Length: 445
Image: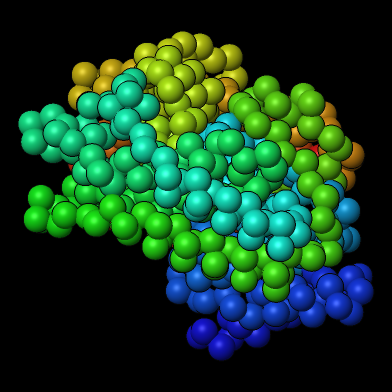
C-alpha cells in the first residue's frame, strides 16, 4: 500500500510541478521524497520529519501530499492560492515548492510566526551570526520568571498550585533568558525564526505533554527533574535542523507570500485575489484550540495579560463554548435547522446549554468566510475545504452537508463531496469511529 501511495504521489507531483523549471522540479521532488506514509492525508503524521515541518510537531494539519493532490486535481494550475486557517503553514509552504504564490490567514500569533518563519528566505551565514549573538547574550543574562510571568496562570511556575506546575523555576529562568536575548535582535526575520525554534523546545522542557485535546502532566513528572542546561542543548539542535533545511530547500520556486495576521472572518476583506482556496477550519467539537498552544503563547511573550488571552479566544471561530460571547447567527439551512431543533429539545441533557447556539454561530462564521472568499476569487475558481462532523447527545452535526447548503446560496457550485476518514466521537458519545471527515470541492459561480 505504501508503495502504491508513493507512486500516486509521484504522479500528482509531476502534474502539479509540470510548468516549473527543471531545477525547481528537482528541488520539490527531493523535498517530497522525504514524505512518510503513516496515516490519512488529512493528518500531519506523514510530515513530522519532513524539512521545515519538523521544526514544530503539529498534529492538526494536512499532510503535504494532500496539498499536492489538491493542486494536481485542478483543471489548470493556479498562480495564486489562499488558506483561511493557516495552522502550521503546510498549504502555503507546499504552494511555494510548486511555484504558486500563497496567501495565508492565521489568528494565533505563535502559529503565524511559525508559518512566516517557514516561508521567509534567509542568508544562512547571517542567520548563524544572529544565533551566536543570542546564545552569547543568553549566557550572561539572569531573568526573574516570577516577574516576567506574573500574569500567566499560576500553574506555569514552581511551586504552582497544589504542588503541580509546568516548569521548574531554574528551567524557566533559562528559557526566558533566551527569549529576552532573541527580543533585542535587530533582524526581525531572524528573531521570528529563533523564537519559533525556542518554542519548539518548550514542551520537552516541561512537566506536561500535549495531545489533540490539550495538555496533561507526564507520568512521574515529580521525579523527572529537568536539567536547565537542556535548554541550550535543545535550542541548538532545533537551530541546526532549521539551518540544514534552509540551506538545502530554502530557494523554492516561489519565494513570495502574503501572511495576514488576524481573524479570517475579518481579514479576507483585505486579502489579495486568489485563484484557488484550500483550507480546513476548526471543527465544531467545542474544543478551543488556543489551549494547545497556551505554553508557547505565555512563555514566548505573545500573551502578557488575561485580557490578551481573552481577546485571542474571541478572535477564533465560534466552534467552542469555553468563553461566554455572543452566538448570534442569521444563516440557516434545512439540515442545520433540523439539527438545531433536535439539540434544543435535548438542551437539558447537554453538558453545556449553549451548545445549540454555538453550532448555529459556527456555521454563521463559515458562511462569512465563504462570502469573503467569493468576493476575492474569479468566477470558476476552486475552493476545497476539509471539515469534520460532530455529535452531541446523539444528534449528528453533518458539517459537510450543511456547508454545501450554505455555499450554494452564495452561489458556489458543488463539484465533489467525499469522505476522507472516520474520526472517533467523544468518550461521552461512546468513542466509536462514527464521525466523517469530508472533502468539499466547490467552484465560484
